[in-house]
Amino acid sequence: MKLAERLLLENKAWAAERVEEDPAFFTRLENIQQPEFLWIGCSDSRVPANQITGTLPGELFVHRNVANLVVNTDVNLLAVLDYAVNHLKVKDVIVCGHYGCGGVKAATTNHDFKLVLNMWLRNIKDVYRLHRQELDSITEEEARVDRLVELNVVEQLRNLAKTSIIQRAWKEGNGPHLHGWVYRLSDGLIKPLLDIEANTDIDPVYRYDDL
Image 1 (cartoon, rainbow, N blue to C red):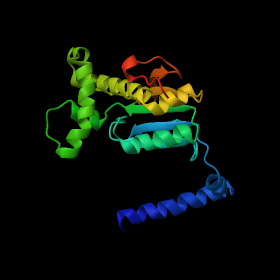
Image 2 (cartoon, rainbow, N blue to C red):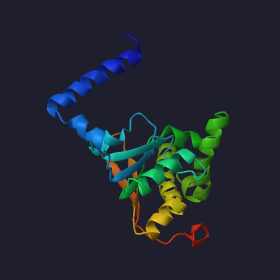
Image 3 (cartoon, rainbow, N blue to C red):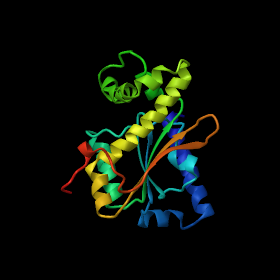
Image 4 (cartoon, one colour):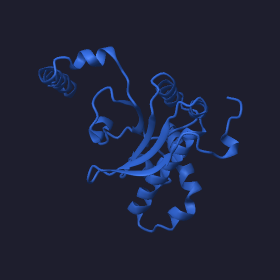
């Protein structure tokens, strides 16, 4: 049996189990999508958003990329954010990183990861540069990478607040609140790092005054 065929068999078993437990399960999912949260997480297969938060299908709107970045030129991310905020009216946006992130660790090296990954990891290197003094003072490599994981989440959360999408929603009184979290693979627990409430002041250079 090919590996992909195993996934199809698992899908059939999963769907049958859901119907057995709740005959109306898929009918509800088909007819409505009203998630209250947008989750921006890492693509790492060990960090599945629904499972680690105990949420069901339909409760999280999810975007994932390498190292959970919020890049102002990433049309994919911005389209997801726009849809979640302006159409789904999510109440909270969560950026969740995780300790042991391969993307963050790669960004601490000077290795050439070829064109596309080099471009992507540059965003994390920028975070390192902003916090170089603190990070360079941490002598143990794993602890330094873990701290960069945290600082990366904080900077991505701030990047969210810089977008016109979030600022316009705040001005119109539609929230959302922003949350920066980090997930620990070793025990499955989430550590809150930073909350940014709606209408929080940001650096004036990023503020739009004519929304």
